Figure 1 (tube, rainbow, N blue to C red):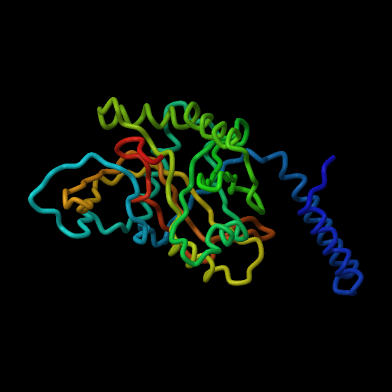
Figure 2 (spheres, one colour; figure 1 turned 90 degrees about the horizontal axis):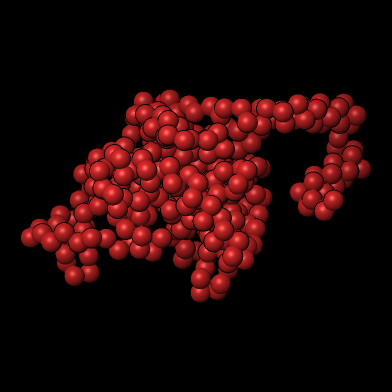
Length: 299
């Protein structure tokens, strides 16, 4: 059996606190009871996850700009920052977004749970103060479902960043295998859905989205020094029939719709003895960073 670094750290910390007389026998029994509880819960690992965003303020990531080639619609005018929607979403509407996702034909249980990026991983992603966003590529594990990936092609580095206490380095082959499994797995369901809804045989669903610096900084401010903090990502289907419109470098008008595409609600949370809980009732979702639409460029 290989060394589990996290387990070694936990056991070492307990031993240290006992040695310092910071933990007594009664408190060790609390740890034992908690471990017994966790062992029992292993048998219910596939239980349904609660999706409750009542009373949440839900809005769009406004610091993220579109980052892909799009079909250009020539126009005499192109209003600055022409968002046809404010970006705030009522919690009842968000439930519809979630129901649309969970109700996809062929949906499997492994695709339903939220995904996490641990605080330590997020700090690593944004350690450079000039980094204003992180592109997150979607992959799939045969057993566990969705995973999040990042890459730096210039440095030929690839990482798995979700549901892990630290980034896991991958080879390019491993990175592409994760993405291929997503393309043939969940994305194949999402593609069939968007083609049916848009009646566009060339429509493709999300392969990549963006985590912006503003969300990251809000997360760091919310969690402070709280241990076991994470950004939780809840998969939903974007259902607003709005658009993003802006002039490109040639002053031609670009207009993009994102309806029927996979996106994620991002919430600052932390693990406690009772499970995971949000720091505050606020969540944002990505729209502008979803890629595609409308083609596969840069995805």
